[in-house]
Amino acid sequence: MMTVTPDTELTLSFHNQRVVISPWGASLRRYFVIGERGQELDIVWGYSGGSRKRGGQGDVLIPFPGRIANGRYLFDGQPFQLECNDKEGPNAIHGFVRSLPWQVREAQANSVTCEVRLDAETYAARGYPFSLDIAVTYELDTSGLNCVFVVKNVGDRVAPVGVGFHPYFTVGTSVIDDAEVQIPATGYLEFNEQLAPTGTILDAKGTSWDYRRFRTVERQRFNHCYVNLERDADGLATATLRHRPSNRAIDIVMDSSFSAVVVYTGDAISDAPRAALAIEPMTCATDAFNHPEWGLKQLEPSETFSGRYRVHARSL
Image (cartoon, rainbow, N blue to C red; front, side, top):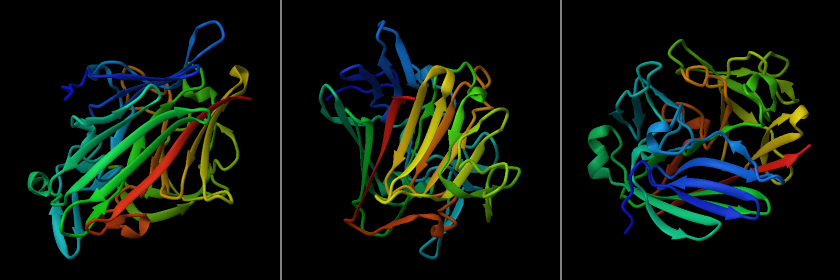
């Protein structure tokens, strides 16, 4: 069995694509293509070595993505208290699994599956007395990078579950201000000063936060959870980042399991602010543990929850 540390990394290859994955948190550490002259063109703004991570780069966010206000929630009539580990305010943030060693179940040249278990006995004292088996697969193919999650309730009670991912994307600009973004959403959550939702969904249409058509990022300070995603006939929602002078675009294609997307310009990252744009697929909105109507999955014992998002880099 592989000994997993924060510095453990695996490289996947397919044609000119390369992905670096770490079983530590099942994190996506790099995604790039090899150009015609042998240069590395980053798609995901990444890092190597656990100590070099900035701003949640590539994290897997389970069993809750985003923040839970004050770390408190009520589920099945019972109150729970999570650790408040958010540097922006008194909230719980981004689940447990991003700082755990996962086991590598399957590794091939172009794909890898990592697995981890959350046991109710271990996490009850931390406010989550539910048992989950979790698997995340990364695979490169002709369509780009595919990321698939599978969560199974292996406990004896219904479990609240949310899944999210935290990649940052770059299209070759030194700062993300020069890029254009398209976000397929008509609403976003209103946050309070501590970045926790107030419970109100604001209408984005016709406002400065309406990005259903391409707009330059400029100096917008994104830290927004978008909801009410617009989808195509196949039920897919696609966010796109592009930069015309570089002739580059990135599509983030989310299946129907994803009901929200967080967009973040990384302004709080001290040594590299606004270097890339986080576009975070999430199966539920921020604080859905307190607002289950925002996409919270209430997973029955022995039930499985799965989904997929895809990253496709292309020329314009």
